[in-house]
Length: 563
Image 1 (cartoon, one colour):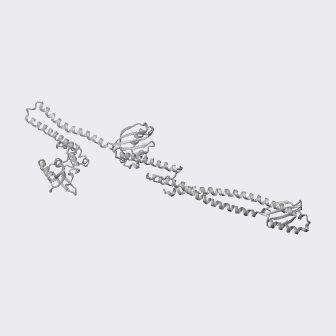
Image 2: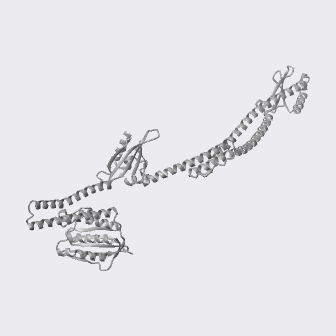
Image 3: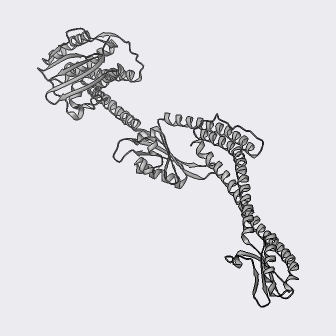
């Protein structure tokens, strides 16, 4: 808003009002003065005419007794008297006959001011003047009054303008400061020029401006802290009023419902969240005025789970003004609980199977079969294999636990993966030869990556060993490398049994087996790929599987290249 847009109309209105009042006062005064002057002039004229008539009557009383032969002399005398007194004279006898008349024929009674006096009971003397004589005087008086009124109006206008400007200038400054306050510019103050009411208003406004500045910054600081706290929270927060309109939503809540926080404000709670369970929970909280904690689904049929605590909102007088819901996404927690339950069940199952087998063979031997050396050696061999299987399982669990917990630090150094895969081929060559499987390392030049040599060797052994395990006799397992600008992709391929698509996303889970019976028969613990993925993740790399049933599998591992 501009300064001119406020102050000019105010100054114009005050000045115009004063001008109108002044002109009205001058006009009314002139009107009544003119009326009074007209009345006074009329009375004065009539008094003068009466006096003149009486003088003329005295002069004519003796002459009017003559007979009619002296009429000419009478007319001449009347003419002389009329010219001397600038009066019009008319004499009418007792019969109504006009004896003498100096009034022009074009004038009527309405144009004259006339005074009549009797002439010794022998007639009537009329002395008159034209009304225009008074009218001319009156017009001059009115013109003078109007001129004086205009001079007074101009003077009043100047004085009023100056006074109004003196009044409006502080208001103008006040409005300028208000404009700055609206733009949150609190440094401006009103210049106080007087000690009157306007000056007091300016001082009061300056004090109010300081108070507003302190209050604004206090509120801004509080809002900034509240916004920072709400924005940094992982939990979603949604508050609604009694009309079921959203009055607050933080960033986490908006992300949960895939909206911007601003887009949620002002909407109906169901329209904003599209969650019927949450809406019912808020409704129940507002109805009962009690806190409620409940787990809900993000959407019907969705696996995403929210733990919601809904509490009533109250003002400082204890009146209910709405409800607030704090939502925590516990999907991963529930998934971890499920994984923990599955892990306990799988570990228990994996341990129970060899322990049951060992216990059965031991009981058989204790029941009197110790003399049969061949049976004894066979049972002890089986017990030894089952014991080794449990040791391998426990070692894998310990390795996985150390890697997941981060207690096993990475000894990062340059690692030649060609040499790692060469050693792996050498270690597993005899196992591959038992099934007549061709095992090849097709990496011919040194490939240096950043990593922990011991852990990367475990990755190589796990992947190649899986390839040998699940490739039928006469098959082939081979290793390749594809180098990029900043990374290297290692590919362990086989032409074995392959994996169906529905299993590819889960083969890196603990104890997950595509074919449980076949995997256990081949000596697998179900932890190899889980350990491999955690090691690769620890190296900030990636691992994925490609497979076609009956055609074979490709395991792709990407690691950071050593610069």
